[in-house]
Amino acid sequence: MGQYWTIYDLDNRVRFMYLGNLGEGLFAATDIPIALITRYTARKPHIVVDYVNGSRGLFKLPPELICMILESIDRLHDAIAFVMTSKMVYTLGFTHVQGRLIERTFPSCGSRIVCLGDHAQDDDLPDGITSEDLAEVAIWKKSHPTFSGSPHGYKTYASESFLSSSSPQYETIPSNLVRKYWIKDLRRDNNLLSGPWLEALDELMNLSTPRGERVLCNLTKREYVDGPKAKGMVKYRIGSDIEDLLGVILRCKICWSSDPSISMSYNPGDSIHRGKWAADRFEVTSKDRLVSLIETGKKEWKDITKEAVGEVEDAWKAFWALYSDEDDEDGDGDD
Image (tube, rainbow, N blue to C red; front, side, top):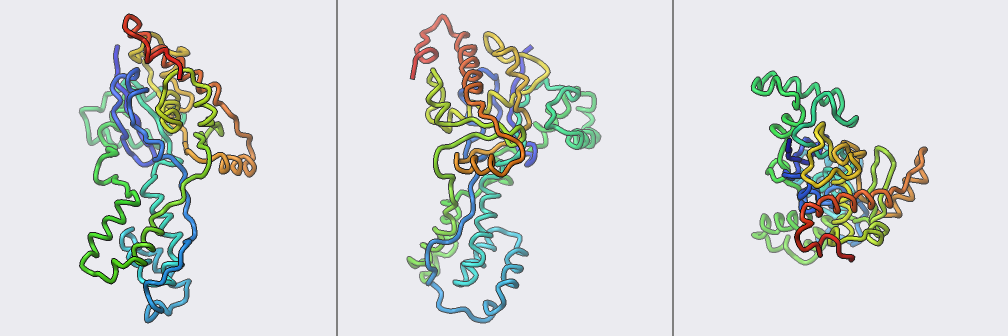
């Protein structure tokens, strides 16, 4: 009995991408760009803002009141506009705006992620899908009687009601698009398009990326995969770079279904459809940040890089065994 697979962000109610058959989807899909679960951070401005001379009127208010005004602004673009009005507001609001940009641009960092097969039954779901999640399904079924008797209610609910990651309502705001938006909107005002203004805007949009080597962290189980270490260990041409390989590793560990059908010649480890990381919380960060998490946490972190690479290699061999009668250069060749 075949089935198809889809990856979901359970906390943001987002349907990332339909994988189709799991065998092909594990290695061919770009369903979860690792960037979307990468931990970016806000920082302090590095430049001197001098495109506005002095502060008058509203900007003579105490800093505390200006910060309260900024926090009360709902729309991100309005908050950016407010921050760009004076030196003082820019300095006060810089980190606040960057924090909101991070929330919009990388919303799945720290969220519960799972890849569900069509036959995942409601009485057989990973621990990360809670009773509160199932209560939402019960409410949804009342208004969708066609699915009232389905044993796969949560999977159906997620497929029908979660937003697609390509939906306009879920559209993220990469820095270059924000800058493009502002330039287009303010093109008629040559003064605001001067060099210092653009320099200040670029600085505001420039989020702080994790420096150093990347690691994939399971925040729920306090386990991690060392990206460079994994890339050096893997025997096959899996992933074009470290981030791509981490994406494959993640997909191999978050699958869940009550049915073992996976469109491979055999089920790797007899349990790839019962992923140990299904519906856990994740982030990709730097080794330096991981060290700080290890030092400040009460529980120990476990390096499972070797185990994860072994699971991915087993899945790779199970997939390519379907094509054993064909030229297997891509399947069995070394890096």
